[in-house]
Image (cartoon, rainbow, N blue to C red; front, side, top):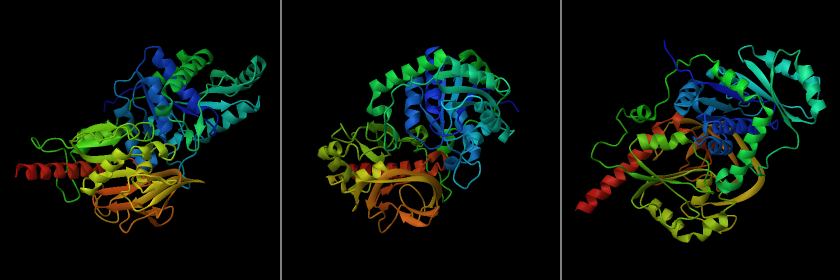
Length: 475
């Protein structure tokens, strides 16, 4: 069976904090500046790093999460995202072998590397070691023979003498050193309570940071050797994930839910963006479009109206707590969102969107669609979840099972309405979120590529509303 060969590298580390993002983003930018079309990918559910990857490459940053999407979709999603690229760079998550808690290798960088049959380059924080680096690398290279640890980049090297000691030690390991980056040459990338500050909030400064990372990686890494390593990979025989094929699937009753029938018109679905709502997966928009929607972005910080003709609304994650005063001050848009929700039009909201639909965030008035109030806390809620739809709604049919992710430092009170969005089944049982009329709002981030019926169902609901309005107007 013939397959597809896309040059590819996985950038991993022994633990968080070693410099994966620095090296991966720098490599993406350096190769892009050299004229290559670079496809950026991130292991895990993180939304923020892919924003920097997109800035470095000019292509959408895409996630590869085997927990959210299932191991069988990793190669197809990769092939879809990397189509036409000269090189794909995959940034890992946490330590190389760290995955979902209590789930073995599931969702680990190692598992993704094996599924992609890709060589791994290990970024090692060498700041407090010399000869021991060889023992560390040996352990990672021998732990799982199916993971090909093909090279090492030494990060936070203190001096020429320190680098010499590290390279001497690595000579006996059998794993080549493909780069060495000095301590104290870090590009400034500010962090906040959920990680790096997203690109959308500091685009000009982020662009300078990415350029600095490219220069640093270009000076300290053997780009020719890394590219040769990426090109010496086997074919992938899986079929690329296709949003059009997913959108043509059947609904729970066996009938087609998308795309919209010829001549019915495309329902306009507005998708929140801008600095306050930066968390989204590229595949969501692709699925909505393939299912027959016209997708139009808007910025709740700047736009006082929803896009003309809006029949559905998607409000993803982000940082509404940071922008609560500005969001609250945009009273015309808050009123427009509440008015749309009152018509029964489909409105789906995740995490930040859930808070925006509430009555208030830290006392600042929001849209008032949900009878709940949000506040910031010091406690981080983080982890994978399994959930089931407890009743039919605009996003999911009753009984639909999904895997999701929570990541926030806020609390919503009450946390669930009379008709909750999800019944969580893992890691503990509880109900969560709100379903009311056409509104589905939850803390849970779900990757729709794992359950395309969510996009199909949302578009079908918006299309029914548009047709009903057209019929009513004709009368």
